[in-house]
Length: 468
Ligand SMILES: [Zn+2]
Image (cartoon, rainbow, N blue to C red; front, side, top):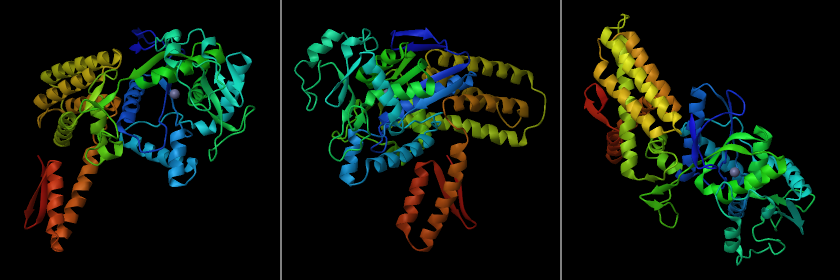
């Protein structure tokens, strides 16, 4: 298995620290609002990485934090006049709902920054003792120049960084000795949540959280550290500086970063009016569609979100799910016959395609090519499976396709089950609306179903429906 390592800018063979095991840390969201589709990309991408490792027989210890204390959370809390903790716990719950709908597996551990303050104080203390940090009137700074490898991940030269920083003075940071130094601990301001520490009543900087949580749950050296590419600098660079200085060993063997998500070729922003939460998208599509869309491009490339491309992903996914539906239908009446010669040949083809899927995923998780392999399997199924197929052939087809879809986090039969119920419920509602002469609502429901490819037919016996 090859992984593109941001640290070396090369694809490298994956060699785990401990055989058969993967220790993986993914930076999680700051919880002050519903997550947007840009937040969803790393969740989907790295969940797929995890699923592929598991499919290949690895045991994955997957840790992803929630940053539950931060300026934005405090601001949101002040606006609503509630506790920061209330904002954080509300949006952690909402985030978990979105993750579930995206088929993102819960992490082995989802640590919360506010529950790990003790570990952060310990690591900051170690950094001070080792000469990598200093206390200036209650604020603790990391001495960036003291860490000789600073810039190794982002390939930034420390002197260039210094030139860029020279004129920037931040309020409250006058006591900083070098403009490049960054905050490990800061004193509280009025109305802010705080914790006691040897330096001041205050709270940790953002970077130290991840260093501490990775150490606690995964150890001093981990296999994979992942996140969005916007985190390479300064966040991940600072994590390396903290962890390697404090622990005295390499922090992470492989650094993986996903590319940006654009909307109609523009950066997503609230002011541009092209800002979508995952919840917004869920009103229009099953979130599996969003997931399938996100995996239709290389995780390292930028991905462009547009109505057209999402619809294309939806149609592709529907094609796959319909093929599985058909196989299920054929299976109901299939005979227990031995595999025919043609079926044996087709199973060989199926296995070749499975190999193609594996090769794509082995090559730095090329989900786009992995999807293509599944599409070819669907094509094979569509031309070869019918009422005369043997049960064994149909079962093999289905098993392979469903297993590989699961690696991509797509549940083959979920939509079908939910949708049937939803359709029946909507038809009931429509019948009732018609009885009450609410024809507007009745028509709305008919249109809504039509949009989902469901055609209704009113008969004397009642409403019958079919998919198109
Ligand atoms: Zn982080």
